[in-house]
Length: 233
Image (cartoon, rainbow, N blue to C red; front, side, top):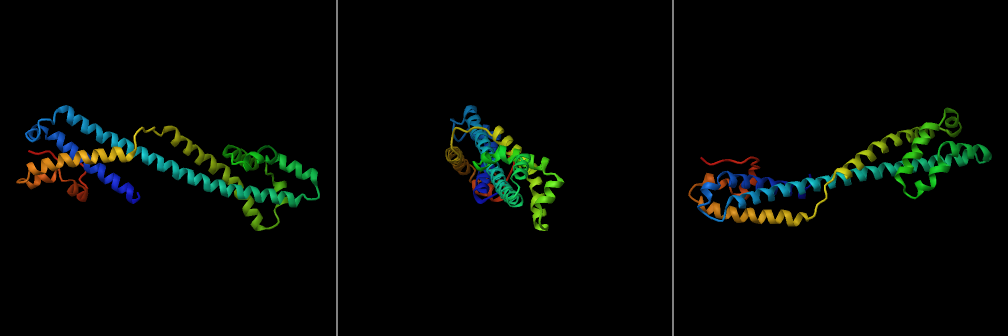
């Protein structure tokens, strides 16, 4: 997690802890404020749930972006490999147009290259799959001039499987991502302010009972990473 993620997570954990402590001890705490009805408590708990849901959605967005970055990286590598292979074909069959056209057709360049050059990810996968399937030993031997060529050409067959796997994962994340209707700033800040307002009143109420006061001390809970509610006796 980066620093912003840590701050969000700590805030949610602290707010959740205080909200649960609040709900667990509401019968006693109503002495402070009669407006703290069951409806008020349930609304606060719903705020916490909404904030957690949005946080998880933000995490999904980050995962999607990470997956997209990986996808972009492999696509760039695959494009370089394809360009190398195309150049090798052009050079190898410079004096044999018929053979060059045959190889380009067999490997899918004629069918998919134009779409690939236009950044079509699906076309790239199809081209790589076609190369992997039809790059015969005979064609490979004709194209390889040295060990470096062999290593580079052999890598091409690996890109198809990698891209398919990452593309499927990326599409699955996008398909399952929830749509949010409210920004993180609004959701998180509303919850944070409500919790602080409640906490201040309760800490004042428990000023002579420091152990109980700690249960509603936001900074104390963040520092000690309290992760579960503690019920008063």
